[in-house]
Image (cartoon, rainbow, N blue to C red; front, side):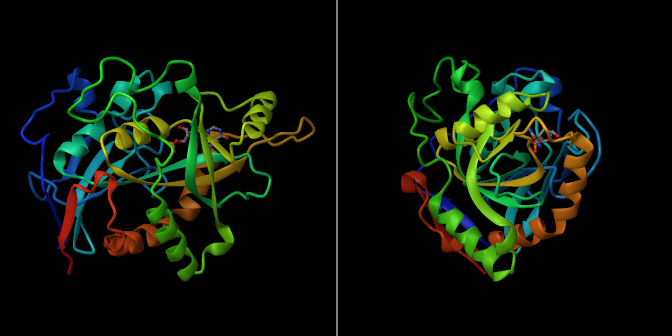
Length: 296
Ligand SMILES: O=P(O)(O)O[C@@H]1C[C@H](O)[C@@H](CO)O1
Ligand code: HPA
């Protein structure tokens, strides 16, 4: 089993109580193998093939926290997430990141579905997220607005390296070895609040701004995760092409998003299983305050 040892645990033993009980109950724990997770992977996705509905209100977001071991490593999975467009504040949307930090998680893998703006992208491509554009953040919808909790991170965190270069390289190596290179890309993910899909003028603007894909999540969680020193890998499944052209007739819809997610679920699972098995190869962690002591 891979175990992490931390040299200092400034956040340990500090309880954080969610402001609203219904939010805390938004995830049902499926299998709790130990009271404290010592491993380090968190995955947020509906792209892994689960479909259901609970207090997470969106079809495809099952609303379960799943604890367990993969390849001998302790993991916790969020099956589904909370979105800004559901009416949750960004503080609530990102709350799980701080809980995971307190649980000892050190690396998170975030997955999502997004629309392809880059004209080279095809439906079904997996985009390794290189960087993001926090569009709601520009308008003050930012999860770190308000008093800064110094126990988690500094007031003005750097975001230029939010997505670990080493983890990106590892996942690109893995996808090449698995023979998936033809549909794996790297790119910039732009978050919009949703819930409507983009107008053509909006899509053109996002493309000109440098976005390769557009979606309605992920950026707040990554921002809070980076703020508290978690290492991040982001994978975005291109579930539709976003129209930049008034003459095109196709219309995007959520059913298409779910259908493509299911189509790629098995491949994404293969990538993630291999990634989990091999992620100990990447040892440089933000702030370098932890070591891997054992891997079997
Ligand atoms: O949680 P994600 O961002 O993967 O969910 C996608 C984006 C929207 O929430 C929704 C649109 O179909 O699915
Ligand atoms: O085209 C899209 N736009 C925004 N969010 C999305 N999530 C999946 N596809 C899209």
